[in-house]
Amino acid sequence: MPPRRPALRNSTPPRDGPRRLRSRRLDPIFARLARAFFRRYPRLKALAFYGSRAAGLGSRRSDYDVMLFLSGGLDWNERYEAAEQIGRRFGVKLEVNVASPRSVEWHYRLFPDFRFLLRDAIIFGDGRIVNGHRDLPPVAKEGLWDSVIESEIYQETAQAHRDDSAWCAEWYFRALRKVVIAESVIEGQYSQQHFRQRLIELLGGPLARKMNRPSARFSHQQIAHLEQVTRGKIAEIKERVASLAKNESDRFLAELRAKQRN
Image (cartoon, rainbow, N blue to C red):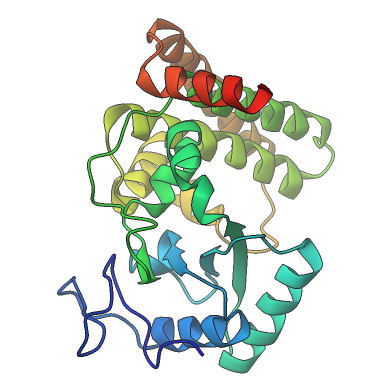
């Protein structure tokens, strides 16, 4: 049976019940959603809400992004069904992702997005699995390179959708977000507020806000601006990553792969 009330914010439940480690007032919906996931998956070790909702910056249209830390994982159909059924019960839209508890250190070292999104997450369950406030090793140079490559792929996808302004803008924005997250991690800036402000500085307030509107259409001038900003930022971060030396996380990952091969 799941605990009556999951532990919150990187805490291990004490004997007299779970303890809340952060003073800011949280929307009760987070605890209700967490209980639903713990009931659905008895083997669930911990879960983390992240993104704009967790940061208190979400709009009415924002999803509730949640990462489940569950040994064995879940297939795509089960994740979709869980998001649909639990989301419908509480009247919200859920985006469900899954990671193995044993893979957390690997993810922290290799994926800039993982570290950035979970740094200030709302965590229920065994907070020792994901502790966003501990001293973390650096992100591997390999992981930063992967983010740059992904952003270039998104940029190419945007160019392939030039006949559809909405899709073209969406893919440019995905590329820009990906590379700005890499930039934020390099600089040690994990705040969602800082991330949003950086996008506004790059795109301008009206266009940055328009990117979050469903079914928005974009002018040729706006697409051209998105393309220019995205190309420039990718080139800038690509140069910065190239100048970085490999670090302890690169060595850790290389040693781990060598052990797996043997």
